Length: 469
Image (cartoon, rainbow, N blue to C red):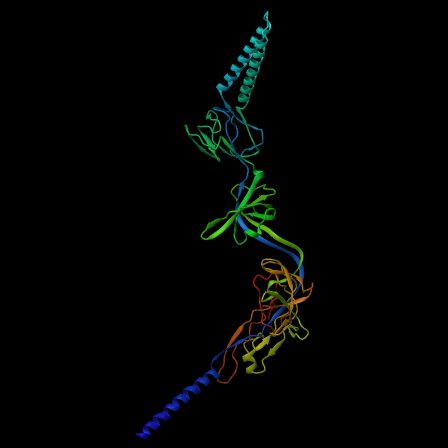
């Protein structure tokens, strides 16, 4: 009985020993290991350039000056010879609202004036002149003359003239239609180029509509997060989808004080006047870029080079002890041991573990969707402690650049950290390294002789040219 217990204990110990040994053996020979690459930097020189902060939006073209032309009296439309699309000038005759009533009023006023003149003549030729009566006759003549003048004015106003110059965009009546004072004609007419008929209805839109095309503006909606940047008087650039290869200049005229909220998003209307709207048609959609802040010859560095530490701004510059790599082109190096290959993966390697530096490239650091920042800078720092931090003062900031007002001089090199990468390796029984040697020289990074360094390509980096194997 006792021997069985002893055997059971021994067996348990053996099982535990085998399990523990297997665990350590697996970790030693087969487990995957993740190794972080060394911190790397590329250098960029501070330089001067023009900075421009913008707010963008889309809008629709409309005319700020539009006139509805109506008749001045009730009558019959005659001499209407303009049509949709015609260009008219201010003061040009458009149509006549003919009225027999007004013609008769002129005749009546003329007769009344003549009568009053006869009365005055008679009273003045009497044997005994009544001065009071003569004075009254003269007042009556003056009133009759005023009535005649008014009748002539009304008769002349039957002819309707263009109040402004512009394009006729709607015609709501035809010759022979009746017209009403302050309204459109009733009958058949065309509106916006299409024909329509009406037997008795009239529109409050007037007999016709004239648009001053020189008053074309564009109205766009600006998000509440950007509206505080937009001010009247700021310049803008406009591009219309329907007009190819042409930009228009404009100026912000008004910024709405009250916003419109939709789906919990508030936006504000901004009206931009257009300097020369030639070619723009009403209703066209346009893209507007408003320049809200700009500066000429600002000393800048890439935004990625700025280090923010508890609200204080720093940049990293090269120190005298900084070691750089990448001074030779296309030099091959072989890992000295499996341990080196296992723990160091900052160089590019081929399938045999040989590492090949990227070829020399002069590609530059570039702004997104813009020209390159400049020629690539030789050298790449490969240790986490490279360089030193110096305090700087900043000015304008854009999406890609930061203005430096103090702490860095033009041409001084600053370090920009590349994103760190990790490499996973698996050990085999013989302890040989089968891990990846990093990415090869297919991409020369930011164009700076990055020999022996891990290739890196920045999205939308401008005129950067990668090295080749």
